[in-house]
Length: 529
Image (tube, rainbow, N blue to C red; front, side):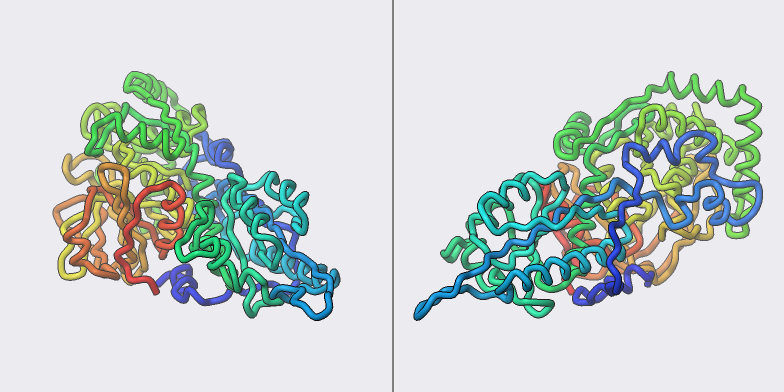
């Protein structure tokens, strides 16, 4: 089990909070600036001439020393909602709650600021904190609701119901934090379900916030929800370089998938025709400096202690030439995702290798790069990359049996934990028995998240798994047998779609939370902890 999975195995485990507050954690680069940092032939040279793969990556790109590049920071606006009461004789004059005086409010403001700075420091993704806003009057509500932010984090200590309703209706996602034992008890800890969600009745009436958006005491519960919002922010608006056109596994045809990606995810799809790729590859092969660089990169990769060559070296060189071309295309388009169509059609002839190794290298750098420019699996692959901070492995599903499912593909990332390179054999793509692809020796015992989107782009299924074997069967080169944590017979009965997306770690909660925001169906067959 990886460290991240172990940390996340207990949903009640509290975050460790540093004693001193820090201003903010917002060192991430922007999504649109990602290729400006890691793009381009020189900047994305995969291997140095000597040293380990990890050291080579760190020397080439200092940002990668701490893992894959970060996305645009999630901007959070904390809001303390409260009301101070005036004592009256012989009548009920105050509601529940531990904020009785301005001194109590001041202490709570400091407590919240300290806790949030510690939360931002503990997060593995960038969070930018706005100064704490106070809502204790009708006038305050409008200012807080119009703040420039991605998420309102509302501390509902007290105050009027219509204030909370106005914040929830602001058009910005809301998370509500309530105190039971972590500080002075909050009024809305008592009445949030009855008054706010159900409006005094038995059925939930509130449409802008639901029970999944409410947290009591536990900042670990806040963190994973913020992680989901961060991933959504960085997934929406992804620009895609669609090499050689579009493909579709969608049940509704070629146009449905791209329309879904544009309308639901805001994807910007830029088609790069074969003729453009041909022109660029021809120029790269005629450029002595580019060829020399590709030769050095290939030799450095082949020379790594955990890399074995089982194909012709020229295919590895061809892959690095293609990598140079793809880098240039992505940088010019300001694209962070690349998809390849016609892998075994026109593209294998243009590149003189399948693009498998190229896609592996791009994912290891922190981009998202998948076989088939298909929009049943592309949104899931991009979302899981940003949720996990690790590469997404898009692969083929097989028939679940005896609690195990096999996942396999030839375009497999090597840096699946986001830092270290797994042992890898460079060999031919299986079906063509040609070119360079990766057979990655994945870590046995590793906890994984697997997502299977359906072909209609309306419903995703997910489960937590554990890698129990890494076989070498006559199928796509990188293979993992994954033990299914959950009702595998239900998976057998109800599985839809074809391609799966797998990453190291357990991110089922974040995935389901994000999909709910988009109106996409979610089925988690792993029994919640």
